Length: 304
Image 1 (cartoon, rainbow, N blue to C red):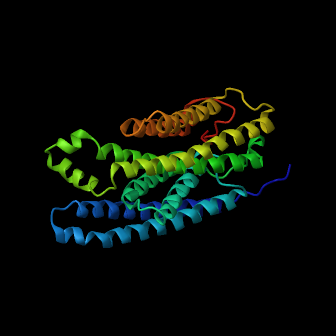
Image 2 (spheres, rainbow, N blue to C red):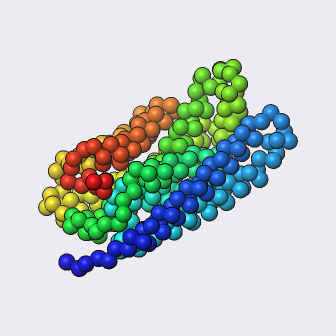
Image 3 (cartoon, rainbow, N blue to C red):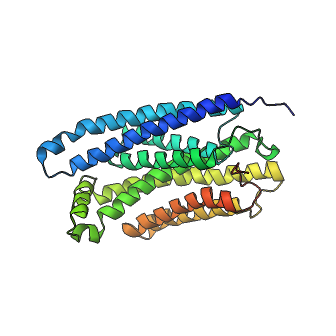
């Protein structure tokens, strides 16, 4: 077997870049939050000054994404392989894909109002990755030394990114249509209500969430297929009821139910949004709890 050169020093530089990206994501998150607070103001002059803040927030988000991407690339170079072999690498790569898809989607659809969620989510994921999941670069175990790993995990990352944006839209839909938000007389809730009024109509958000989840489901279906092929190459069986395999199938089933119920059973509105959120919670459970606390053939947290 060919020896693979590891470069821990370069991995350290990659980590510094990820930490720098976190600082810029923090600035972007605060800028977007301040932008939303200005938009919710009852004073017209204050609201009119908010657009400049939004532009600054988008620029900061793009800068953070560039720094973030450089950190991901250096991590891969330092390990002489693709950077998604453990929870730290999957976290930094997955969150980079989320922000990239969001920025690309902005050129097609006006979903700027969920930018606060995207910046905050990436900040949370990177913070957890840096403080809890970080490990130095390591060589891959034999089962992971396959190009099917590259395909399987890459598609899973892309699917998760689309599901993430779909979940953000579902959350916005649930709050925008919530009766308690509409009827509450609390000052804080009234401010929140004015912010929600800026979002697109609930029907439009539901359609957007559905489209993102359709793309995510197609990619997740291929994740299952590529994973089965990888399992056959690594362990000489396509399916073995391994913990990770089971949860990947559970997630597929939840989103299949969501799409089927939405298309044929008229399951729209809040029920549809909640089902989409259940699917995304299952993804988070699969990535965190299953990787950290369950045993299986391909539960690779990297934390030992």
